[in-house]
Amino acid sequence: LAQDKGIDFKILIPEDNLPGVWFRPRALEEAISNILDNAIKYVTYDNNCPKITVTVGALLEQGGVIVRISDNGPGIPLKEQDMIFERGYRGRKTSSTVSGSGIGLDISRSILMNMGGEVRVGRNNNTSSDEKGSTFEVILYRDARQ
Image 1 (cartoon, rainbow, N blue to C red):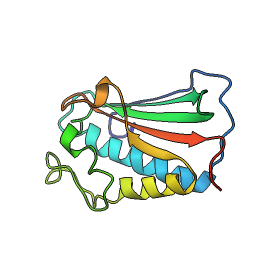
Image 2 (cartoon, rainbow, N blue to C red):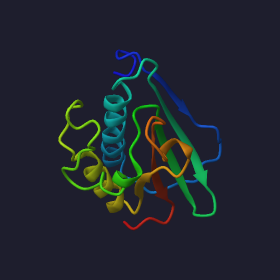
Image 3 (tube, rainbow, N blue to C red):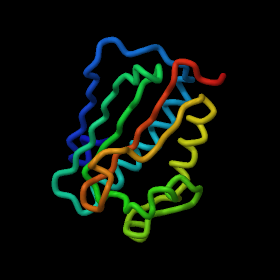
Image 4 (cartoon, rainbow, N blue to C red):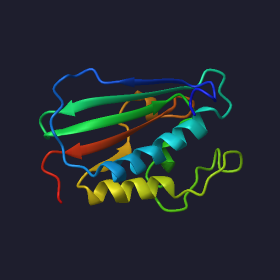
């Protein structure tokens, strides 16, 4: 799908020794698919060179794995970043031009929480302002609640 829309899509797994973590494969697939679907929708909004990068890394101190999904789309204003996980919420900047129901991130958050993991807006330079894109971090832990 990304290639059909002209998106430069990359998956990076720089580490060989990722720790084992607990997850349900189909549930994780649904959670990450929702986030990727959003990235594909928003990265192509008013963007001539759309890019999505998925990076997988270890969280050694916490005994977990982090999956970062980054794009160079319109970004999420700081004042909306806490609201985007609420069921039905759609960002003001793109809600009238990008289709969707506003439930995907809420579903992803619920799925990941049920596996003892979490999803959050990334904590790096790509998410601090408009026009710089967005990063979502999916975190899974070795000692997750089952």
